[in-house]
Image 1 (cartoon, rainbow, N blue to C red):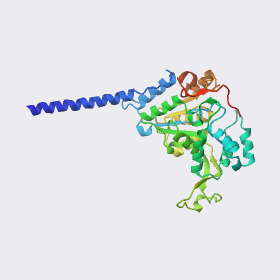
Image 2: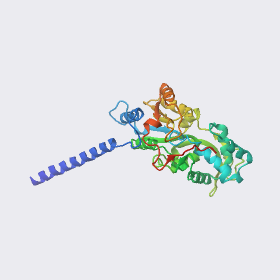
Image 3: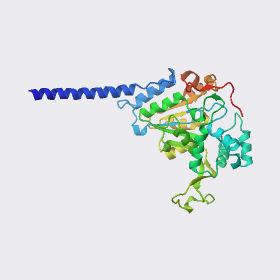
Image 4: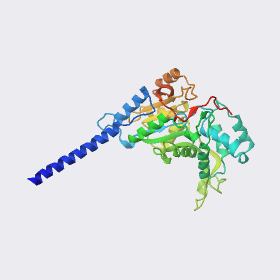
Length: 350
């Protein structure tokens, strides 16, 4: 009889433990707190969607291996609204301040000519590639990191590497915690983007192979002038170097091509902030996507904590008409940067 009682007690304890574990898991799933967001339509839409696609009993359930989320970087995850963004300021500093002895005069003139409203298109990207010719990939990556430690004059106490939007970092972590694979799909060059991400608040959620960006030509040192990489083999101790050549700018329709080539399936969530991201948005929400998908666009409409000047009414209406959910930096973001970072009195214009 005593053995029976002990068995019953043991079984009850096991049941109790499993119940506590289950409750703990459920409360953990429910316990994600968005510290940097205000109550908003965009956030409610996102959390409702994630709850549905991660619930095995839901008609909208999506297996974990198919939960792909893609994020643009500049203007979506990081600040793009001060004078100009990371890779352009890095080019200017490299040419005019850090290593003017290494670049031809014509590239210095390009650096001097860049002004607010410039076009970050393929022509400028080709100049970026030429500026760093001869650097090994490791040297280039290290320079990206060192540049990131410089302070922008458009904010107080902000290094370039500190310019991640806290609310969007939360979104990345929230999706990661819910079984999403996160890709950063940027118009910035790939090695640059990898170095930025690896030294950022999202480094634990985005691995290097999940970074897609503009591509500069890379070859084995000593073989830069050879037309085909099939003409030689990598040997122990060889270095990979930037040749100054350019391959492809990752903007507009190229984003969809890169996604297909490197991911091999349509994302179910896409986040951007400008017209150059709309192809990626449309690719996600295309009616041929086998899963229910959503797209979100960040609107830079905060000119108090930020330098945003976009018209929320116009932008949000335009994005909604295209099937995207707009995010207002002014109204939806409770906090944009850490308390130590504040907007400067004047926007930096070198």
